[in-house]
Image (cartoon, rainbow, N blue to C red; front, side, top):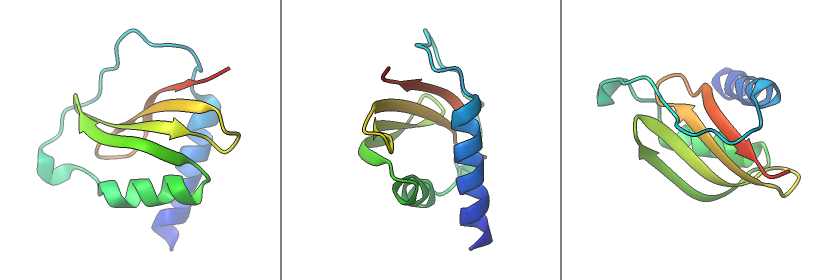
Length: 93
């Protein structure tokens, strides 16, 4: 599906460009709930990309994912609720 491919590319590209350091505070844009992207779709893309999801939640205007990446390293990723762009990512060194 083209949407999944585009989201996969977005996730992979964004993770490569993110600063991989601890962030004191994460600020995500605020959208009406009717504009939020489908959580199930984002989770499915993450699983297809090889992530293991320990916890996934909507909080503080972000989708937050806690789990492991493809290399088995612990990750904490904050996504824009509308575009699924990565706002912040912390990856175990």
